[in-house]
Each structure stands twice: as structure tokens, then as C-alpha cells.
Length: 206
Image (cartoon, rainbow, N blue to C red; front, side):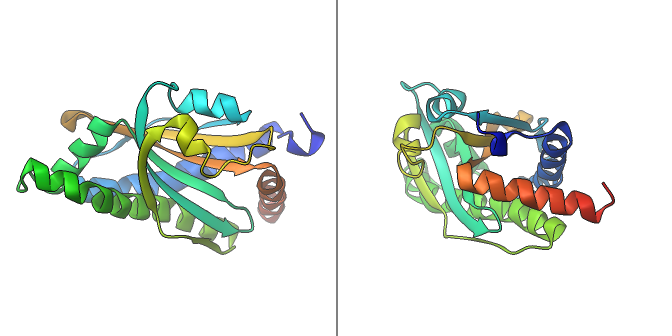
């Protein structure tokens, strides 16, 4: 692995802690939407190949529902909100409080999940931007259902060998809903994020 992609233990711990803070705020936003406490896992940070990312997301045979949102700023990448399709549909049902017929729920699902993704991803990115005192902007979210390969092919360049994969699981246990948020960064963005982390650490006395 290239030297400029190596993370020190302090850099790794800092990225995980900042993601923890951002996803805590995102989890609060989702809790208010569904009126239930959201359980969050410990964040995972890995430097992986493109194929390894696909394997982490799911198997090639399974289809997943994804809200994808590109973001730009002092570092950039793709933010993903991922579910198994049956879980994403159940979340829409909960949001609509079972007041909408099933066939109409299917029609509403893409827009409803894009709004959920916009709120959750937006809360996380806003938290990171505030902590780093840097601007992060995001495109409109998109929704798709497909295999992990199909989804990665829409934004991961074939030539990039290493990708930073940040993942945090969430669950609404009583409603049988779970999924996770992931951030995918390619090599140039990883280098910029490392520089941002070092500047942040220097600012707080490390």
C-alpha cells in the first residue's frame, strides 16, 4: 500500500470518533422520524480494494437498496445509505404509519428513501464540516436497487486499487429495520482527508 495512504493509529481513531459523532446526530434525526431510539454500531474503517468493498457490502448474488449522495469539499466521495430491499420498504411503511396501501407505498418508496438519506447523510456531513470548520456540499440523492457490482460501477473508478470504506450499522429493533451508512473515498480524497485530520489534531494540541 502506498505510504501516503497509511493511517497512524491516532489518525484512524480520530476519523472513527468523528464519524461516531456525526452518525450520532444522524441517528437522532432518524429517531425523531420513526419515534424510536436508533441503535448504532461501532464505526468500521478499512482500506480495501474495489472487489473487497463489494464483498463487504453484500454478495454479488444479492440485491440491495441504496440511497447514494456525492459530496465535495476538502475531501470528497460517495455517502451511501444501504438496506436489503425488504428492509427499505419496511422503513417506508413505518414512516407512512401504515396509512398508505402497499401498491402506493411501492410508488412512494424511492422519494421517501431519498428524503431519509438526505436527512441522515446531511446530518453526518454537517457535523464533519462543523468539526473541521470546512465546507462540505452534496448533490441531490439518488436511489437504486441492484447488485453491489452494479452500484459500485456507478461511481468507483476501475483504476483505483485502494478505497477507504467507512461503515456504521444502525437498527430499529422493534420494527425489524436495519441498514448502514457508508462513505467511500478514493485515493486523492484519502490523502486530503489525512491532511485535514492532521490540521484538526494540531489545532487541538496533538
